[in-house]
Amino acid sequence: MEKPNFRTELLRTLEGKTPARIPAGIFTTAPIIELMDLSGAARPEADNQPEKMAVLAFSQYVNASFETVRYPFDMVVLAEALGCAVDPGTKVKLPAVLRGSMEISPSVPELPEDMLERGRIPAVLQATEILREKAGSHLPLIAGMESPAELAASICGITHFLKWTIKRPHIVRRLIDFCTDACIIYARECLKRGADVVVFVDAISSPNMISPDTFRSLVKPGLERVPKALSGGKSVLHICGAADSIIYDIAACGFDGLSLEGGTKNLKTASRFAHESGAALIGNIPTSGTLFRGSPEDVKKEALTYLESGIDVLAPGCGLAPKTPLKNLKALVEARNEFCERKR
Ligand SMILES: [Zn+2]
Image 1 (cartoon, rainbow, N blue to C red):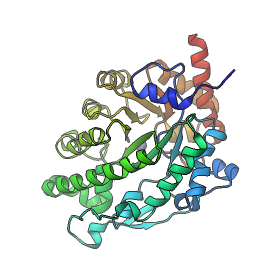
Image 2: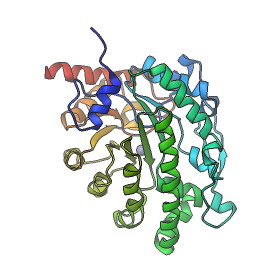
Image 3: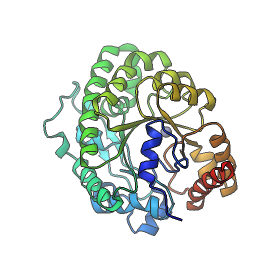
Image 4: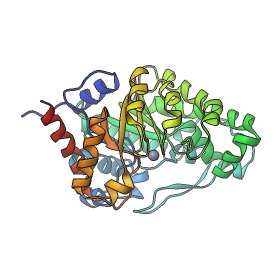
């Protein structure tokens, strides 16, 4: 049987249409150790060398049977380009911000004209072109980056960010506005070079980190600007933690998809709000409890409950732990196959 066109299927899903089969893939960080070993491309090289980044990204399709090609593999590419000091990480440790640019020099930074030539941005853009060539029109390319609030927290430091949302909201507002501009410029370039979807990853906006009121007054205005600025390019928002208390607000931001974690309690309500706003619901198999520690049977069982609850794209709920077993990723795809087979 001819394989379905995974790119068309995913784009149709993000347009609110019914695909032939529910897509199965990943919108968060994917490179587990087994994929690095099988592909011969490992971090930290795959975090900054375009060829290796492309090989490791493509192994999600080749070795895990995922129907998405998601890259790069960390959340600090823009932060690094905007002057944050970054620890490059190791095979099992993601690149991470050591010191925000506002902790080095205290004023809200200005957008550098050469931003797209800074840090690892050229490597990501080059990897996009290599992957477009490799994937042709058959597989969707998902470029990931930090959301405006996540970038803001990197720039001023998480502790400052959380404190300032209460004591100096005017600075947070200005900083998020600046970060929104940076995200839009970078996202447009990713789409221009061949990415099909840009996913904005946001851990700091989780209700576990800031209150829903703070989200609405300080973070939401920036997020609302993003999808509109991408001129039809597809965009997805990933929120970490239990997003129930802000689900209505994130659905209203205008993204084509919402990627949520397993901690989200009421998936049916999330699905209803998402669909009413024209967004697909993506997720949300728990990464530590099920994908990392569970068996393939656990993954399948859990996946079926999410599929029954109305998920539109079956995917891990967040970034994968490096030691997540590959057989559990394959079980995710098998669960989708069995579910769709039963529905026929
Ligand atoms: Zn997450």
